[in-house]
Image (cartoon, rainbow, N blue to C red):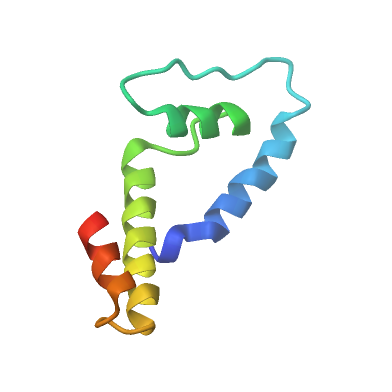
Length: 86
């Protein structure tokens, strides 16, 4: 999965509009601490995202955030503080 596969998210959102005309409401029951996953899937009205996919997206976003923070310099107090919190 490349940088946050926003293209596939856009595709999934466009597919959502096709489901709006359906005669049922998709409801994914809460399991574990996967509130974000269940929220997205319920909003989009199907099982579009798994916990693994969302974890991969989160990891990619963390890496991108670290890369962008490092662009401003790794010897700054902000970057050191960022690394401590991460």
